[in-house]
Length: 351
Image 1 (tube, rainbow, N blue to C red):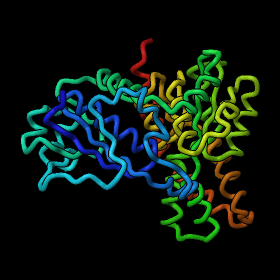
Image 2 (image 1 turned 180 degrees about the horizontal axis):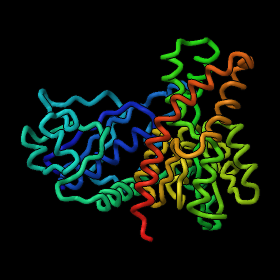
Image 3 (image 1 turned 90 degrees about the horizontal axis):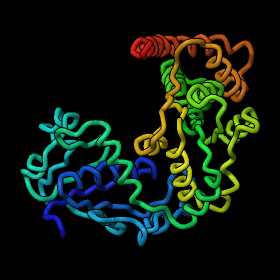
C-alpha cells in the first residue's frame, strides 16, 4: 500500500557517497512508514572517464531482481519539493535529535513530504547501533547488482574462503601534495596538504600489518587507486593474496566500483585510511574496521614521505630537511592523539 509520506533525496556525487546516502534515507524512511524518491541523475563520473560512464540505475543494479518496495528512482529532471519543505539534516530543532533518534510525528509535523541528504546517519528514536547497522545492510542487500557484476563476484568468491582487505588511498590527496612540493607552495599550504596526506594515506606496510593483526596469516585482497602500490602490496603478500582483477576484466568503471564495494563489504576485516569510497562497505559489511592512523613509530610514515613525495617530486637533497621537519611536526600531534586512543582501547579490553 502506498504511503502518504515521502522523503526526497537528491544527490549528484560519486557512487559510494550517493549509494550510502540512499540506503541511509531508505532505511530510515521504511522505519517511519514513508517512501523514498531518489534522484539518480545520469551524470558522468566527473574525475574519471568523464562523458563515458552510464550512471542509470539499470546499468548498476538488476532492478527486476531488486526489492524496491518503498523506493522510486528518478533519472530525469531534478524532482521539486513543496515550498517550505523541511530538510531533515538542516532543520535546527533536529540537531540534537539526529543522534538520539526522530519520530515519524516529528519528521512529518510540517507536511507529508520532507527532504533528506543522507549526509549523516538517520535513526528512529529508541534504535540502537546494532539495529541500525542491520537495517543498512538489509537495505543495500535489496539492491541486486547488475548481472555482469554478479558474475564477476561469483567468480572471485568461488572458493568461499574468508579474507581480509586493505584499501590503499592516494588519488587527489597525494596529487595535491606533490603539486605543492613541486611548486614550492607557502608553508601554510604545504602544512595543510601534508596533514591531509597523513590523515588519509597511511603507509602500505601499516595497512598490511593491521589486516594481519585481525586475520593472522589469512588471505588478503588489495584495493586502491594507485596501481604501482597495489601491485607492490600484492607482491609482498605472495601466495596469501587473492587477485580479484581477472574476474573484473571488462567491467566499466562504475560497475567495477560496485564490484569493489561488494568485495570490501565481504571482508572479515578492512584495513584502511580515511576514505569516502570505503564508507559504504564499512556501513553495510560484517567485518571489523581497522582504521590506520598516526601513532607509535614514525619510521613507516617517514619512509612513505621520502619515497612517495620527496623522491616522486624529485626534491634535491639540500631542499629536503625543511620538508621532513614539517612532515614530522604535522605527524606528531596526530600520533599523540592516536597513542592516547590506543591506550584507552587497550585498557578496555578484557584481561
